[in-house]
Image 1 (spheres, rainbow, N blue to C red):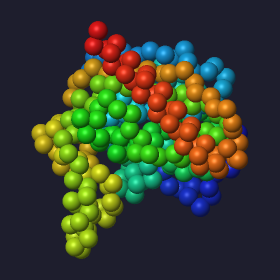
Image 2: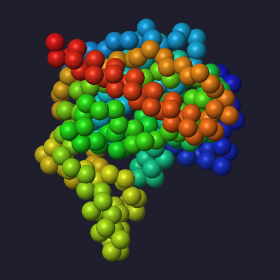
Image 3: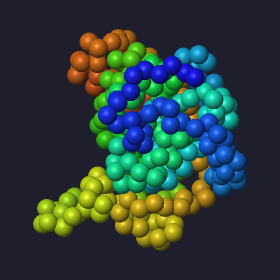
Length: 284
């Protein structure tokens, strides 16, 4: 068994707070389902997997869409497992609210390799020798407006840069295009719902979802709120990009706000360039 770094002891029983929750046999059971979706439902076209270092841990940074189903993320995971084997771990950072709203879903995700998006968990994963996958834009990214489908959207979150600098790992961008059409986001009513909440009306499940989209999608037709959805069978394109290596690493670099922002701008700029090329190529 792999030797893991120390993990937060106060939360061991909660989904996402243990690297050992990853279940190789469970992942194997999902592979035929993912394979069918990959080949026949989403008809995925992918490239760039040669950019994944053979014996080096990295921070994969992704931009995705498609609502809570986030099919591009699942297809990325399938590509990883079929290319490198289910035994080679990669841990994905999962929003802590998933466990609050649905512990059952969080537990299933943890079996595939999801861990709570907390610095201690990400560091534990790196120090176990594994790579880590993060989608900095979070729920604002997966539910971003359809008009923003061609834009890298991280909601100005810089924590992933600090993580890469502290742990001295390169960033490998993971981009996709097409998943934005599996669910068509028309508007975000979050600010309006926040005003209603301020009048004393509680949130669903007593949790602020951070977005409150209006979208066209299955099975609802018109969906309101961050509800689960069935993706439309739209072709998805994915690409793993060359590693991004910064000039400085370490705690001092991670504590330099101006340097962190400069690194953030580099990542967003390079990912946008790669996305533009991916879109252009998909239309040829």
